[in-house]
Length: 519
View 1 (spheres, helix red, strand yellow):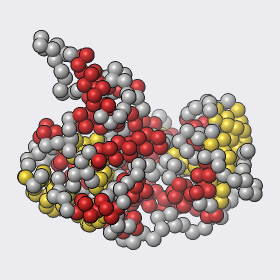
View 2 (tube, rainbow, N blue to C red):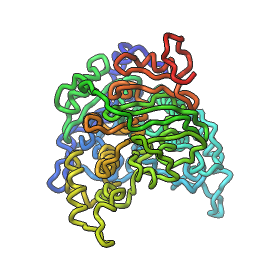
View 3 (cartoon, rainbow, N blue to C red):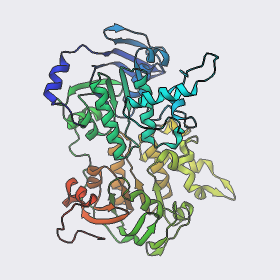
View 4 (cartoon, one colour):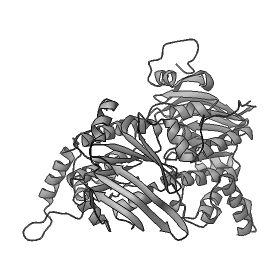
């Protein structure tokens, strides 16, 4: 999506009256001051990014704007007039729509039924007018240039397409303010590009967009302005000409961050994981090795096979060929339980559906793979288990008073820490981390990177899949580039660049020396 020249947009927009103003808004939950006299404003035709670590107050402010909770103090103004938003109905009546990270849709209903939910057209006899409902759905989808069939069950669509349905509903209801909360956290590159196109279209139509994201590169591609919150307070704002990514990181964490990925040089030991000819559906043959004290990252485009390799090694998918050895011993798990027994731990890409038991407590989630340690005579020693879990929580800076909460109550970053804590408690020799910082704020990212480094220095072998190239290069010792289910290049991380990785990932790299591992 091409943006207008920054200076032209800034000059034009600086003379506009704000579409939305949140002024001195405060909110307290018991003893916790979640928002302390924060301010935020949005202009028509603007993408205004709201950034901050988990717990900074972003979600609380958006819940107030959506009418889900009530502010304790402050004012909300639309077009200069103060408004009261006491319910989602009030928010909708004032032209405000929010696309949550956890989509507010009904998967078992059709696209058309979701688009008309609560506003279903009726015949003169009071019956549901399905034909008119589907026609209205086509009209709403056409406004964002989408050809999704309104008769399809929503659950049959990809997450990206489901998100487009939510946006179509907001557009169809003539939303003037659209909030997008981590909208690309689980999207493919193609789906993200489609979302960027629609954002450009809505901006051109005069819609004001509040964009919440932890992805700095994405914000710098899309946003006109950035506002940063920290610890429930307003820290600062600026246009992209006035503020740098380094400024934003410093404001978010309250200290300068010279290099997010910095770590001292590591000296790997003996080979722990050795893979030869690994193959499964759509993947292989793959050869790789990871040594004790080494971090190896697998990079590549969506669909290159990175995730599939991890699932094959963990026994989540059946392998059709190949051998795997852990510290010289054969490992051929038929399921994850056997992989765990062999000393392999895995944090999957989709932590909510595959890596966590959302309704169970933080303690249960961390202890589940190590219960054998705490059982004597068929009885679980609950005190010993809780002490061991709390030790890992302290290590990963998880609040100890969250131990009995359902893990779904944690922020995305803390959920990821809980998923990682499971394998720290298990003391797995090989750790497979698939997109370990996806949807995680900058502060939690730094803590996860530090833990990865500490695990490597403790002699663990880490195999990491990441679509974030700066991350993949910055935290690893070696980089394995995948394309079409095979490793096509092995690169030394400190000697390579994002450009070189992409050349190999897309198959356009020139043949310079012996960089290819598998031709």
